[in-house]
Length: 126
Length: 139
Image (cartoon, rainbow over the protein chains, first blue to last red):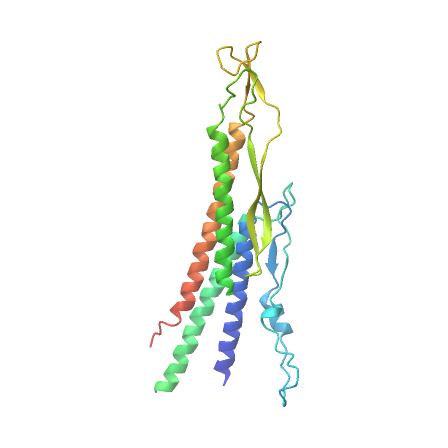
């Protein structure tokens, strides 16, 4: 059933967006820290591209390689808008723009989940 | 630790650091005329504050904290005021090395960073609220 995959995808994106928000919070907090490099999350599309099927295990002793999930959400140095004399690369404007993007995507995400849920409930009730 | 809670925690550390900075700025501004009390004594010396990022073990994020409150080594200005208790034998008084314009600028920058932190906190709360709203089923 496809709807289940949609829920999985939505959950994964919500989790990625949360991590993204935490990264932005770290940048904003360190806006005046000398030598701090602004961080940015690797785009969600790239995370999805790397996602692979997990191997089936027929014995509990098989080592589970596990699907790529939380661990593939990595942050890297952001391309700086400006670098101050103290070596800090955080731009508050850039961070607030990114925060706006996160807010919009999260809103879309939760509303989609609501819609999926309504669809499922409709088929269950009728 | 939940990433959104980590965001709140990090932004909170930013608020604490910026308010410590504002406290130092207000200290400098309040003491802009604080001379010594005995002849030839040094007046108030301007304080500076520096930040450092620190890895938080619990959330795995970079918190910010006040690294050091130091002093500004700039030379004191000298004013001629023989009536002052801190005046030396020539009637000169050393005045604090506080520059009001620099303090005002610092205060505005603190304000701006504090507002940005508050904005992040508000937004993280919104995201949490959106997630919780999923439970309020349209039934």
